[in-house]
Length: 382
Image (cartoon, rainbow, N blue to C red):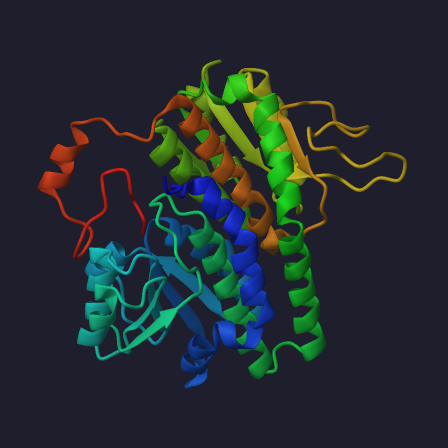
């Protein structure tokens, strides 16, 4: 009997996919760099939905830092109906190449006389009929609709685009670019370590994680993109209400819903907001047993490494996952994303929630949002 690929399959494949892209950083996003440098732009507009939108949020501030240009992320629906076709560098992302709203965005760009640049994981899809330039971002095959490998590879593709363009614009030096690539390679090499820590964290908190009813995920700046993708994955797989908030915005209304039945994930952005995130974690923990803290192990001189179960001299709170790495804020997606992907997969698999409510087929009969052959109701690839 043929083995069936799962979310876990593609989480495990992410390391190899990222390493492949990093072995050829000059070629990975060269076509997009060439198009961007064909004329002078002060702004980039990324148009994407779902997990592709969240990957763009994860890369946004890294791109701005390297390119010294404004980067805006907009949904296709908003762009088609309300967006301005300004003098920005536009491109539209759809991993599947079948999202009808992404196709409409490409068509609008053409109508406005702009190049329709489409980035996808399937260049043979119907997407190509609507593009002036169709670019493969390197995800390879991912047949499960709850995309995982596609999110991290798209984030890296956008980061490598920024590095390549910045170098050619003389905004960074060759030495600075190599330093960034070294950091990315180190994070990617340690992907299995994070996988092991996340699995142990899930095992330690299995009772709590498999009894979630509604969830908030809190993150700031680049970590907000991680939070948004985490909330989407939790919602679409475990099938519970889940939403993402900037940590301080959570305190201005959403927190008033808290009862002991709620679940809150606090993501440490590993920057000036870390102390505030710890305060919020402690405050929420006073109400909710299902409050979890996802962060990095703080360096200290006299303690050993945190082991796979998250235990050590520094922390003994099992609801805290402290990953033993030193990672720049804007590179956190390559560490934290797989944690939430694994939580979503493990909990959904344990609760047998892959099959959706049978009445959802009526929803699919009423509305279309994928071009050509559509996936089953259990697939939501962007």
